[in-house]
Image 1 (cartoon, one colour):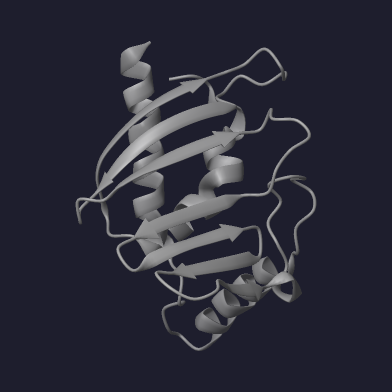
Image 2: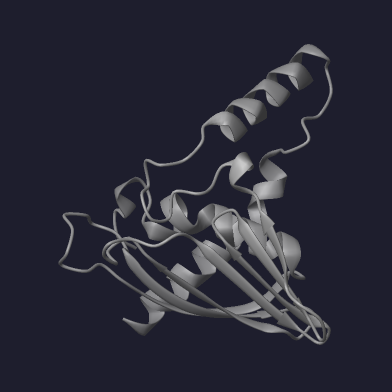
Length: 168
């Protein structure tokens, strides 16, 4: 594997969207992927990734991540199901049922992601997570999010990159 430069697009930009996707869907059964290091940035790890996943439920999904698209776009998760579809773009959620108008939820008050601009994100959620962890230590209890909760997304990222390496 490459040096990873501290983490490529999957580990540094797409990880939170992938984590949310895994939270919304069933666990991943299979993953295939292609990853490359473009010539558009001075980085020694992947900055373009395309992957397909099959969830334990049988549903399939696509992961597309890049840090070289210009001008940059917000993170996006789309889910199409038997009773409707959901589209999450940054902090805007659009829900489409089988009938009636779509329901739009503007979550901008909660901050958005940094997909279009990696530096344009609200630090409030990170502060809250650190505060919750410190409270857990002080109260001698497990934190609500622990390292084990991050394992599924870490395993998926490693599976995508390992599959891509095998194809190289």
